[in-house]
Length: 288
Image 1: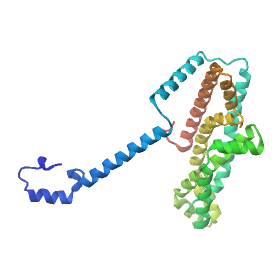
Image 2: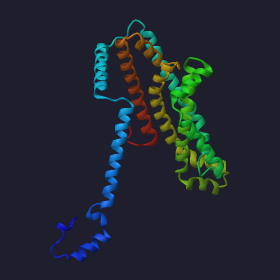
Image 3: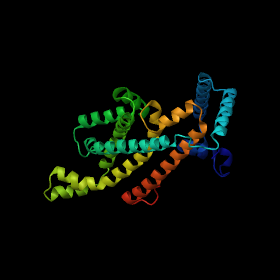
Image 4: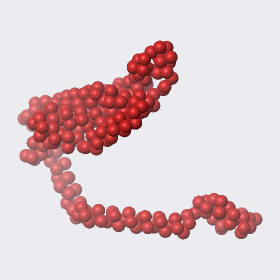
């Protein structure tokens, strides 16, 4: 709305009164315009500084794209190579790593989720401390955990399983705690009213409500960990990532393309199966 669009029968005093009551309807004030301009200038300056800091230039981008197109041409046609058996073992190893790491994390996260839930643990200090531990573990990337466990237990799938376990444990514990806090209280109160203990109220009043959600979240993490396990092998944590790294070093791009296609198919199958299981568990039709 502006003064030019105001009805001719409206006086200047009425316009001023409405402008005082609804200032935003008449457009931003000069101070707001100045702040917006200043904010835009700061953003553009920060963007220009970041581009300069990282040496992002059109010439460098063009050279990079040219090299990428060269690699893509070398990937066609994909080929399994002579060591295709190692590729299949690597894929199976990545899936096994993802499954074992997710299962361990999901099982251990259940009691931790209850300890971190506000409606289960009344001690604010204990709950706050546990939540901060979750935040700390979740703040470290899986690759960092993989590097640490490779140094601790040596090369191989065990380091990858431990990296996935620790990383997922914190996130699943937080998600489980939030699901428990949102559970309906009446069922637990009904168990207590019938003479049940607090532990029985948790077991029969809360757990049946949140268990389908917990299983659905664990399935989603299994799908995600299948992709993550493929990368952990690059740092020596086992899986198909090691096969990719070895073929990139010797520039066998056709075999790299074959591995990527095999990974996409594997993840797609797991995603399809996991989606059907999640829909059955939580009864949602819109999930995929």
